[in-house]
Length: 471
Image 1 (spheres, rainbow, N blue to C red):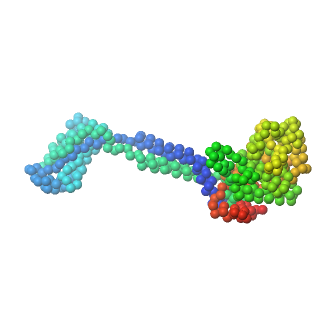
Image 2 (image 1 turned 180 degrees about the horizontal axis):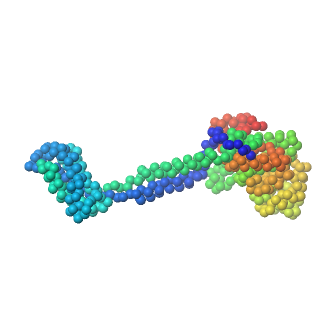
Image 3 (image 1 turned 90 degrees about the horizontal axis):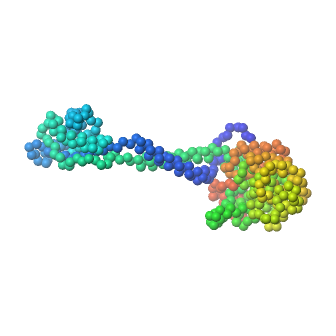
């Protein structure tokens, strides 16, 4: 395991992994946006104080029957004075006296309508009836106050005030709600992106080379299980085997190159038993083990594929070989069947298989038995290769038990799945057991760039593929 401080590099960031995390956590983003909306709505509702405005329109005219022009001129001249009078303490004291109170807190405002001799008088209060009472009192007492300031102008009511029925300061929270939704979505999305970037998993080939303690055998691209709309809707989840005509060329080529490298490595060292494992579940180790067996069989090798993941067997699902009368590994280990009964030659795939269907508790007792050793020894005599599909190393110790019987091991590392440190610890465990560790197989990797995919996987298959420099 690497102990040095992790160095952040841009080539370890996968845009597609980030997008996948965003889509997978879209519900978090939606919840954060909704939370922002509710928070703003709640706060504004708590802080909102409705105000009601009573309004009257008055015309300014000169005393003595002056013409409209003189009234308009007089209004413009006295505009400031009108406003000050209506907002004066003297008038407010008279209003308070009339209403039988010590003082009033309402806002009184007079505004001149431009190019006219009209004045709009407004009284704002938290109570609609209170606003009406104050504006009526202001109109009644205005003359008495204004006579002290000027006597050549008078006000005439054009529009009588009325009791306001709706607040004049309607709560306009729409803009703030939209901002809160945006902030919630962007904030949660940004946090998801940050966590995705900082998660110490293998996201790119460059990151794998830099952080994994071992050779990168090959990068196997992501392959969809359902190739048709019908299959996707019904979630048929067909197995991904290179023997299928529906499998894409990049996927098939990557698997075959991986098998070629393993074949070359093991033949030089006279090795026969290959253990295929992973750190965590759902990294695709069973599919990789099955496809490696098929690829080696295509090269003319005699291959035995054994499912030794007794707690969660999967190979019978991969090959869709669920047969009522078939004998399984547990039958042999329980001494209810012979090796010849459980070892089945699959004519279509041209490999020998030993499958397991039902989960077995206390699997370690079976795997560390003389029967299991006898099965492996028999395979060594008759087969070119024995491929063991073992349980994930972080789930149980069964994989470590099988290391005693293996010559070689490979670790399946799925893109953005397992912590790099856990993968390195697993490779150290394999080495410490005295087993030859060939390297890591990067599985289910999404292509970052179309041009890179076209370059690496040309029509004729001669393009360089991921990891080829590490043969």
